[in-house]
Image 1 (spheres, rainbow, N blue to C red):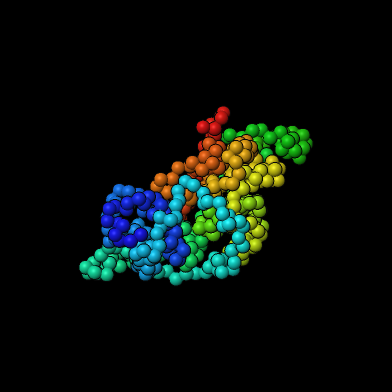
Image 2: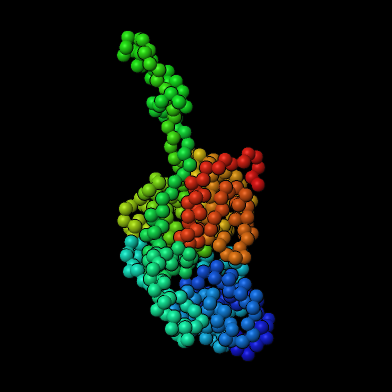
Length: 414
């Protein structure tokens, strides 16, 4: 697309197609660009259609660039895209549709050691930079003041609102350390075991009372009361590690590792098949735990068989007690190769077993996102909570949803 073609407000080019195409080109060049940013760019182009190269440049730069270090890559890709070398309109996309079927849907090798090398590395804290239209020109006079304000912020604070799909390798390692420290708790339930308790709010324990009476010659000099012990409900994670979830997989696995070691949670991953990773993720070494988890899942970054994975979990683990009365957390974008009616049938079975179902979908953070994909659309009515979890701040909402103890309404799900 040349500069001449931009003079009439992007004639014949769909704003969403342009945004997706340009974001894909940036991502392939090594600049983090999430689907959320592509949606923001499409909306900005619709609101203020650029009529020349310069307005389009600043629109794309403001939306897609988050630091000065990214400017060289951005400028090179923009020049290639809009000076005639590449036409982003050749790449069509929709934020509510899964990727088109093709060779990339086949299973690819599990993440290598290079991808998990930063799992427990300590990246040096660096000062955050703010890219602004005036950077490098008249705004240089404000640089010391701006730097002083940023220096007062926490070294990790600038990562709280940044999408996991946009993190650099160093930032991803830093976020994974933060995510592993998140404390997850589930609602309590009354166990069958009892313990001795004061009279208030407790029931008479005949067995302990008779046992105490035997020690005094059969004379029950005192009554013993007891109440059932409260125990936290079991926490079970089902994490999608298919190709469409790859930008978020590493951080979510760190969340699973912290939950396994801290909350004694059960962890499963699925793509074209279901794999139990509780034992692998219980390793105290974060890097080794992620490497063992990646090696145990041969279908890593493949397609998504959501219904088949749910059926395998329910038949092999859920009905035997792992899902009964438990809080089930599904981390998936809902893009499934299975027929929607199959996904709905398995979600109905899971709902009858679980105490609560929390669905974490990072695509939910998109501005124009709607749960219209077949798998997500039919699964949503059976969920008690639906959150994004696309960045560190959003995971606090997910933790609150896991901890919530609200009674489920009786009858058919709404």
